[in-house]
Length: 249
Image (cartoon, rainbow, N blue to C red; front, side, top):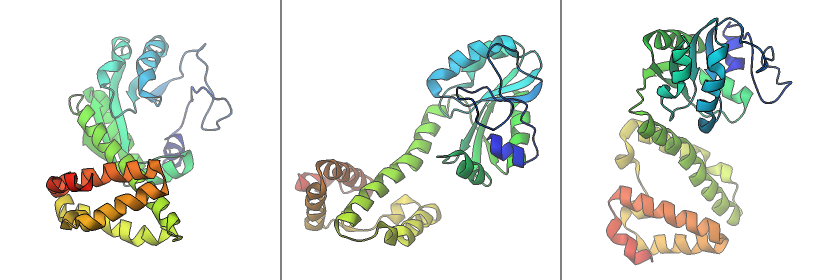
């Protein structure tokens, strides 16, 4: 966020981080008040947000808006900050950011869930616009289902491709050959919907082929076999082929 904001023309007036020498802006300390700022973003683990909010509450004399970047934790977790006079909100970019540089590059064009006090929502929406993010409203009530959906869209895709790569490698085939297939499948889902995009032996009900897949996956390793089995079961349920599951066991 600091990299993207700097490139968009914002000034990073300070970064309060566990690790010194990060280079993303002037380093701050818990022993001093925060400098004057329009927006403070709390980018920590979900379990640490409430603690950080408590610690920040007494250091916000010249801060207008404070927002956390969790998609799951409610904005109400920032009540100590709200009681201290700052507007509070949530700002959750719906994008994969595995490292700072690629994450900064990936933000433009992504969506971002925003909620909170009206003043916070206004300021965060302007921030989103400046970064090329597309803002949508995200209420505290919707956060659990929304974040589960985001986690499924991101991490379940990674897990399935990792299993696929293990099986390609077992066949002495470069997993990269699947890239055009995967990109087409993703496009199909967003163009046609999930139900119309399922293909292959599970969707067709080719039980013997599925059994062969399950067998070879277990031959690669117990872990790959278990993961392949779970994903096959999930696919069968989605395809309306639950009656075939008992034939695989």
